[in-house]
Picture 1 (cartoon, rainbow, N blue to C red):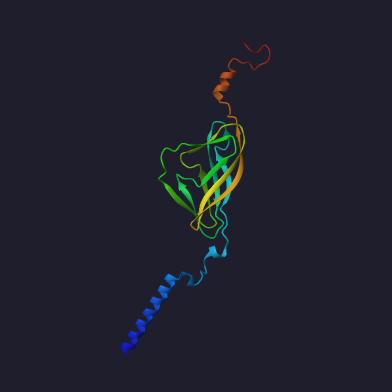
Picture 2 (cartoon, one colour):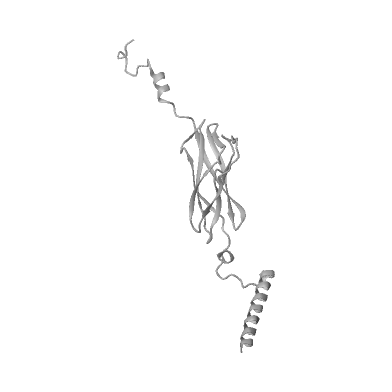
Length: 191
């Protein structure tokens, strides 16, 4: 009886070992995943929403930032760069100069998870890059957000126009210009 029991245990171990080795060397023989949303739902691009600048009003001579809300419509998480490397980059057609002032490399590149059907606020440019408003007019910005989806790098683009104005006159320069100017009617200004 002991021999029969021992034979059954050894036979079970051999069968389990052979099955494990077969699955290890032939992973295609595994049963398909029944709860893998990536297999049942097509991958959808990250959505760029609500692109704004800081400051809100752009004027000549200003350095500014861009903010965007990004939304993950997929049933799984995606990842974007964070830390000193922004996932957001921009190409301006005119009126803006992009300057790279980085003297040191970035050592704080991290990944931020955007969970399924969640939104995150991102900012650009990356550390050491400046967006400078150089002249008055409307500029078309092509905004690209780079993200990671199932280990693959993806890009999504959106275009937006921004208006760059003249700077508002400073109150001190305005008051200097108005010194000695009489606003009253005839005979009311002392000379």
